[in-house]
Length: 406
Image 1 (cartoon, helix red, strand yellow):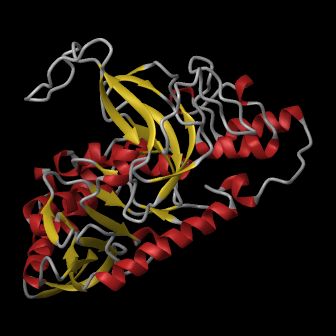
Image 2 (cartoon, rainbow, N blue to C red):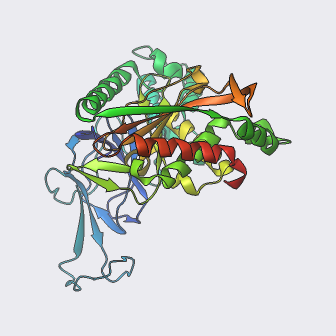
């Protein structure tokens, strides 16, 4: 069971998306795990043959084995600079993915009731929210045609099938399933997990904050020109421009783009920006946009739209939930002028962005009214200080004054 966050101690194995004996490659999605915050798609860490699959439905501590991947030593797919000696046919090289006890090679994994696990070629791709709704409403997913991404079955498909079949349910659907992101119980669990992590953060991390007001006249003028003639669905929002500039500032000031673990700083080798996203059913997650400093503004907008949509549908990947090196919380669309964030361990900084408003400012010795944003940085004083945080805000300001260079 992989660790999918600093606060994760265990997870519930919901389902396997592969069969025993299937060939998998690094990055393939092989399973779905329910944490206290979200349901996460787990990716394979190796190329090889997956077997010994743990039965779904169990809560598994982080680090315990849930399957075994057998690596073919003759495949040449492993990039290890020092290959191990070739094994005999009776002793294949094994790469272990965490399970409590070695399973005696079951013929096929059996799903926990009430859900029936279908063979991989028959199993529909289902969003976690749609799956919960289907179980609550007794809708058979095997006969539904998905309308979501990659033909995935989404909540709207389940609701449509429920209305068409007119099968009475033993209990009414919750208000969350009717249009939010999670049932009330799951939202409460998520809130508890968030509370525990944030309490730990404030208890262990000596926070300090700095702020500045950034003139966005140039940025907004460039954005208006950039969006001219585009249909509404393809326009870049200010949030994407701010995110792209933040990623570049993190690259410029690497002291704030790091982790603090085991009593020492571990500088990050890439800029993976976590984006705080509030879920309609309650709760908060912060999936990462990987290598965000290398994306253009248009690419950032596309990736931001994608991750926000999937977060609210409950479809996230392990890599997105574990690799953030710095987080952005943007409450501008909620009307807040300023936000002082709480650092997400083991990160060492969080950037807060407020609403873009017309504010009175001095320009070339004259009073003017220009669009601006209040940007803040909360940082870990064990790792950095006001000098680096101020440099970060200066870098953020610089990039927002020259968006044409992105």
